[in-house]
Amino acid sequence: MSSGATAQDRALAAAEQQQAETASTRIQTAQTEADPEIRFVPREVVQDIPDSPETPAAEEATYSAESLRQLVAQIDTSEDMSREMMCLAQAIYFESRGEPLEGQLAVARVIINRAESNRFPDDYCAVVTQPSQFSFVRGGSIPSPNTGSAAWTRAKAIARIAHGDLWESPVGDALYFHATHVRPSWAGRLSRRAQIDNHIFYR
Image (tube, rainbow, N blue to C red; front, side, top):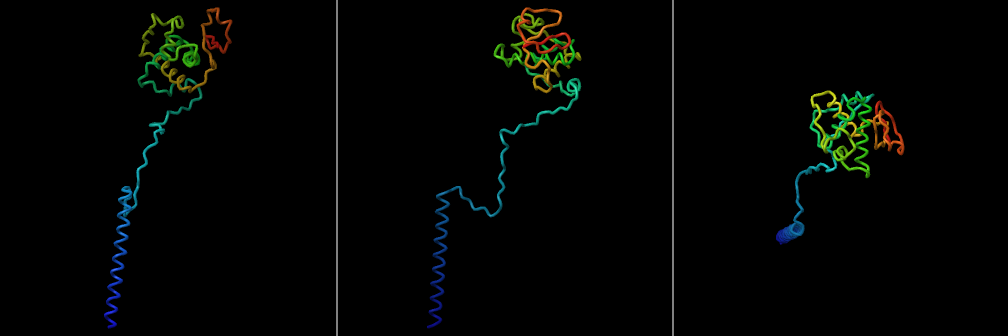
């Protein structure tokens, strides 16, 4: 009689455990169906983090130079130039290739200042080809430089330096300049910024 009661107790306990496990399984199934995103993974999951869209593809080049001449020597001029940068380099070449590097940079600075001013067109090519502004422009077109010359290589380097604001020019915010051998009537109405070799710069 005692052993029969014990067997019944064991059978009852087994039945209760099976019911509890069945109920637990139903609860987990219901949760999974309610939220299909839930997944039980038996190991650590490592998720890749996408690159930030604000992270640049490549770091900008950095330069260390004690003089403008050293900086010009460090600039890579072998890469293709955009149309705007080409116009800037051409203006430097035709307007000031006989000037010292500081004078060439000053001419570039004036063109950039004009493009940034609301008094002039808003891009380098339009600034350079604006009627009656630069004497080397003929019929609204810029002549072709001697691309195999050292002067052209320097002009391209100066254009990159000026555009990247890599070297400070004493002409600052100048918008106008003229050669020292002429006396334009407008010069007296402007503020003189600097004279570099054969050019005087004004704002």
